[in-house]
Image 1 (cartoon, rainbow, N blue to C red):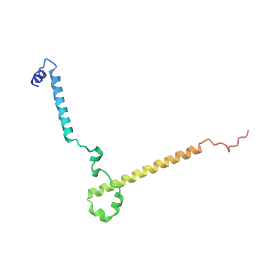
Image 2 (image 1 turned 30 degrees about the vertical axis):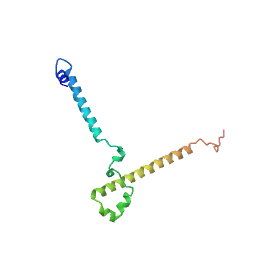
Image 3 (image 1 turned 180 degrees about the vertical axis):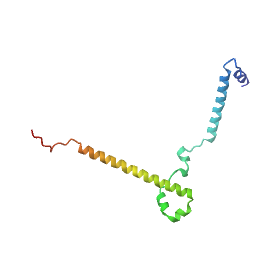
Image 4 (image 1 turned 90 degrees about the vertical axis):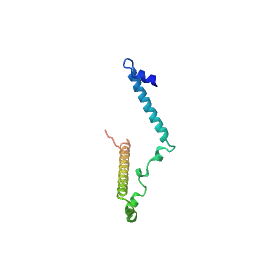
Length: 121
């Protein structure tokens, strides 16, 4: 290491590049050890906080005054956001279904069934 440091600081040779490489390699090893130390067997999905997800019964909790009084203001805001997001998703789903139905009806109208057309010359 002392010899590498001596050569790395020699300005006449490509030493500064070697010094940079040594610093980067040391940083890389530090990050690798950090990952090895903090690594766990749990997958990312298992590590997601429960705070990041919406409860299934958010709407029911918001309509129940007894349950609502037990929650903090932040939790109530989170539930309202969850309900709003759920309603927006339902609107998008209904719009998608409506567009698909309209497309199917248009295709049926344009199916080319001209059996009842009377052509007289």
